[in-house]
Image (cartoon, rainbow over all chains, first blue to last red; front, side, top):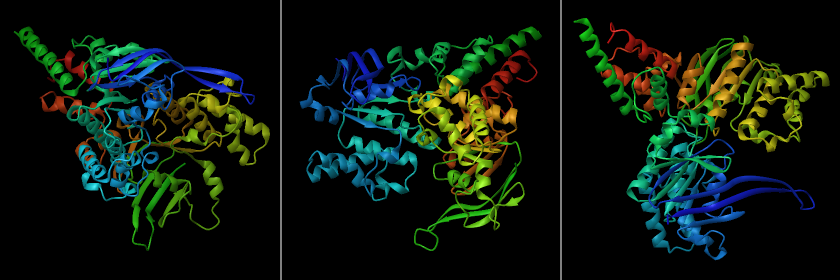
Amino acid sequence: MGIIKAANLIFDYIKRDEEDNVEEVNRAIDHLSLDIKKGDFVAILGHNGSGKSTFAKQLNGLLLPTEGTVWISDMNTQDDSLIWEIRKKTGMVFQNPDNQIIGNIVEEDVGFGPENIGVPTDEIWKRVDESLKAVGMTAYRKQSPNKLSGGQKQRVAIAGVMAMRPQCIVLDEPTAMLDPNGRREVIRTVRELNQKEGVTVVLITHYMEEVIHADRVIVMDEGKVVMDGTPREIFSRVEELKQYRLDVPQVTELAYELKQAGVPLPDGVLTREELIDALMNVFEKKRLEWRQDGN
Amino acid sequence: MGIKAVNLNYIYGQGTAFEQYALKDVNFEIQDGEFIGLIGHTGSGKSTLIQHLNGLLKATSGEIYVNGENIYSPGYNMKALRSKVGLVFQYPEHQLFEVDVFSDVCFGPKNQGLPKEEIERRAREALSLVGLDESYYSQSPFELSGGQKRRVAIAGVLAMEPQVLILDEPTAGLDPRGRDEILDQIDRLHRERGMTIILVSHSMEDVAKYADRLLVMNHGEKLFDGPPKEVFKHYKELEQVGLAAPQITYIVQDLRSRGIDIDDNITTIAEAKEAILALLSGKEKT
């Protein structure tokens, strides 16, 4: 069994009138079953309102199932006595860095989590050092978070989560408010944590480019998993993705468009290098043909 | 409606130890009916700049001319300026507050003191411009999807009938389809109504697709000013200031470095597709 497991998960947002009678029920998650392996980098895609964020909030007990079960490392999120253990295991990072930073200086902010759970002082500093190093922010430890760029703030927020020594980090659109450089910084940091520290990553995003290095891509629609596979498998299904209001990376789109126009290219091209190599092959073959025609 | 900025400076905490230039000697002129993409890293001065253009912030020094009139001259009608230059902030849906969509859109023109029929005419028109039909009028704005809420908020600004529309990252947090819908609608306002658009964006792909001209800000200064194709040729300098070129630009550069004679002006998928197909169909250029 994986580090995250959901079985037949249902979650309803229930609206009540003044007398507490149920007025409206909105099913955000609909019979979702999922198993995420320890150490995997999993990306979740889906349009606004598809249930991604609701699902993310199930992963550390911010929301609890209406029906079905979620286990984090074999711990049922509905078991009250385990909730703090579960929150130590899965850390969350949200969209707006300004809502997540509370310390006056960077190192204080990173130490806030472990301090709250009563970690001894020496150990807190050790964790602060390690976490800042892991996100490449050691040089800024004495600075005010106000003076940082969006990408740097978001890395501090990630360091704050890392200081809790989680096994899993859930990031809900961490780059939506960042400039291109900030986006690159954050994604690079998350990939490194996954590869070097072995942290399981669940990344929710609307930027298709950020997904190409994931081990697994899950597409959600109306609270269900509708596609599940490697980035290459998922991004080969261009038309299907568009039906779910999604997109493919620009590189993939160009390759797809060219293929539709008759250029012999493989399906699901993900990176610039792949596209260039494939196109150069096509150009080489054309050159040969033309040379033969010329003779 | 033309806007001209002359030697614009904006200094935070002037005279204190924290003195910092948010805008430094910024000059530009925007012609009536242009579609401008305003790009720059976080903290480069984009948001500060646009708040000057409708008088929400007053420059420490320098002048702004709107339709040839200096907005800092005594007696200038700032209130009229704000209905001429409509500003859609980041996450404008956080500013929705009325009980239903229609009342929310009416709020702006109502405050302008217009007659009821005119207010309602404008609200209807603004909502149709953003693609929301009558079935939405009586819904609570808080029960709509993210993209729909944002369209209601944009309609609220459009109902003021501005001549210039400034949008600060209107697509942040929207799914790809929602993003395309909003940008297509803005583009239609530009083409069909001749509205001047200033689009602040972190997506190089979006500004490459829609803008006629880019203004690039860096640390409060204007770094580049020109058509997207010209600006993105400086992709190495753009990377140094925290930006990038659209992915397509990199593909074109890679092909060129491998000896393919493809036009280095290309910034969009459609252009790249056409150029590659043309190269594959004729042998003269390869």
